[in-house]
Each structure stands twice: as structure tokens, then as C-alpha cells.
Length: 123
Image (cartoon, rainbow, N blue to C red; front, side, top):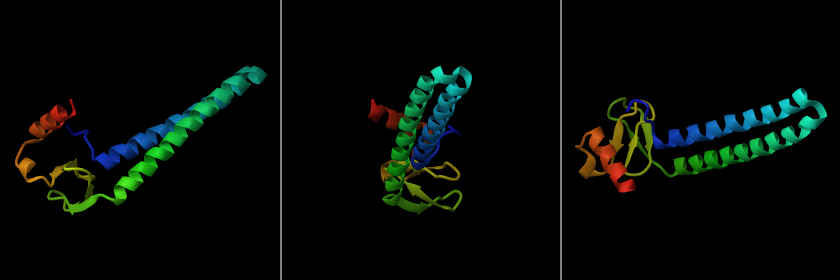
């Protein structure tokens, strides 16, 4: 429960992970030339292509998160009193991770009930 974050923050996390994976693949691919010399160029080419695809995926995720971020509802968190962005009917505060909602039907339920309702609607 304490590891949950806001939706925009989780999108940004996936973008960061794709960036790191892409850079790692590019570095490992280039290391193929160091370890295997001339025959390592094939390993380098494969690593660079996979790394480039991961970096382009990261670019797409960051672009998507940026577009979503411009159309979000901004509100003040009742716990930490900081301005946060909210996607959908329920989200979490970006700073203190408090569950936020604009839906009056879900305003008085616990976090466990909310997660059970969300998982039931997904399946």
C-alpha cells in the first residue's frame, strides 16, 4: 500500500525504466566490440537497435504522460495541502500518496474497498 503512487508518476516511472534499459542495452552492445573485437560488431548492432527501440518507447511514454498532465484536474490535497494533479475518478496525491476522489459515492470508503472495487471493474 505504501508503494502506490499517482498515475502520472507511475507513467513517468515506466518512461524512466525504458530510458535506463535502452541505455544499458546500448552500452552492453557496444561492449561487445571491446570483448569480441571485429566479430562483436553484430552484438553491438543488435544492442544498439534494441536500445534505440527502448529509447523511442521511453520518448512515447514521456510524451503521453506530458499530454495527460496538461489535461488533468488540479486540486489541493487535504492531507499535505500541496497542489496535485488527478487523473480519472480516483488517484493518489503525488507527494503524500493520499487517495483522492471527485466521486461522491467513493468518498467515504476505505482504501481496501476502493482497490477491491477497481480490481473488480478491471476483471
